[in-house]
Amino acid sequence: MKTNKQRGFTRAILGILVVLVMATSCTKGYITDPYIDQKNILTGPAETPTHWKLVQIVKDNLLQDTLPNTLTKQYLRVGQFKDNQGFNGNWRMTAKDAVVETYTNCISGAIVDQTYRIKSLSSFYLKLCYQSGGKNIELVYEPAL
Image (cartoon, rainbow, N blue to C red):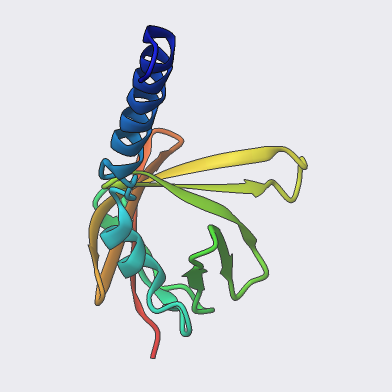
C-alpha cells in the first residue's frame, strides 16, 4: 500500500509528464517569408538567376535616350546583387513593393542604402522607381535572353 507521500510524488511526476507531452505535441508554427513569391520572381531560378536588362529610363515622365551599353543586373537568392559593369552589393525586400540595395559608394567609400519602389514585377517585366534630386526616376527591365 502506497503512502500519501508516495502518491503525491507519483501525481507530481505524472503532472510533469502530461505537461511535457502536451508541450511537445502541439503544432509548431513556422515563420514564412511573406515576400517569397516576389523574391522568387525577382531572382529567377536558383540555378539560372534572371539577368534583368535595362531597356528604358524615364525621368519625370520623359523617356531618356537609350543607353549605349546595355546594363544587366542579377538579384541572387543569397541576398546579393551584381551587374555587368562590376557594381555589386546586397539587397533585401522590405515590403511587397520595395527593395533596398546596399552598396559601397565608389567615390566616397560610404555605405549607401538605395530604396526602390517596385511598380511592376513579373517574370517578363520589372519596373523600379525612386527619387533623385527631386526627380522621379523609373527604371524598366526585361529578362535578357
